[in-house]
Length: 124
Length: 124
DNA sequence: ACCTAAATCAGTAATGATTACTATTTTATT
DNA sequence: AATAAAATAGTAATCATTACTGATTTAGGT
Image (tube, rainbow over all chains, first blue to last red; front, side, top):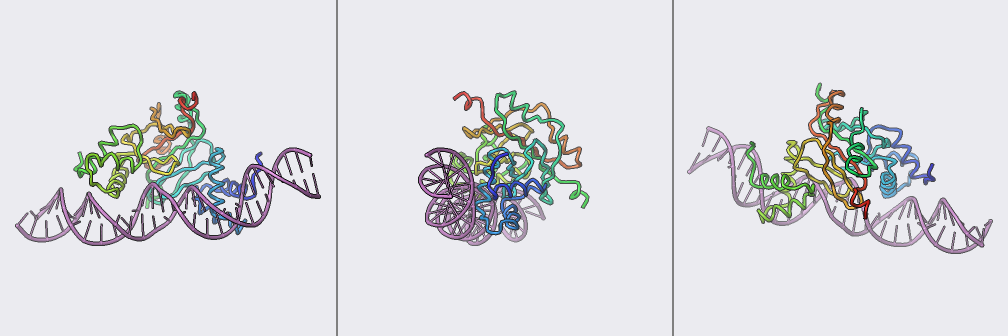
């Protein structure tokens, strides 16, 4: 276990306790409940550090902000362009890691995104 | 075949004639060789329109700009964090479309990204 | 414990890719 | 040809993210 600062540790715990794929400012609002005077720059810096480490996932779905995921294991992200939600879904196969290996590419992180409309929005 | 404006048609042809996944301003610089007084806003608007249509792919690899791909068919993107290049690679299976179907999610576009280091950068 | 250097922080200012806006031009339809 | 709708060039505004600065905390050595 790495020796993280209180700020970084808190950010990581928040990300691991949700499946909402929050943006940096959403994370900021949550962390402030625990560390009221944390700065937004600190949140960005630690999100970048955790993402560089491969501990969290950073994903962009084209809605203007970066989203973060405390689960960095390979899984699918289903982004509904109607309600904006990002759903997690398990994958039967990690085809990206396999493809990387076949191409002599050192895979560190894999990101799977589907754009479309979720079942809830379809029925509304 | 849709009836595209000269600007949109030119942008699409440029994207289809390269595999470099250019940014909006890189596309802008290319289009200006053909339509010198095209505006950057027009490039952005048409890239968004083509992306909404599913004719091109818009992908973010975390380097600050959006990248565009004239090939919207499912394939892998290998992003080297060392040289910054995005390599295309074929996929044996479109696992994302399958996963979407299993989850009653209407898939329109799929994006596959691997982050890591390419063979060229490894050998340098 | 003390000391020093490195890392991290809070707070604020700056950046720059993207978007919004407006007046003009082009396209489509009748 | 007349009218309405769509697209454009050019410019101004936005705002998520990054950079910066001086203060604070952490880590390792003595």
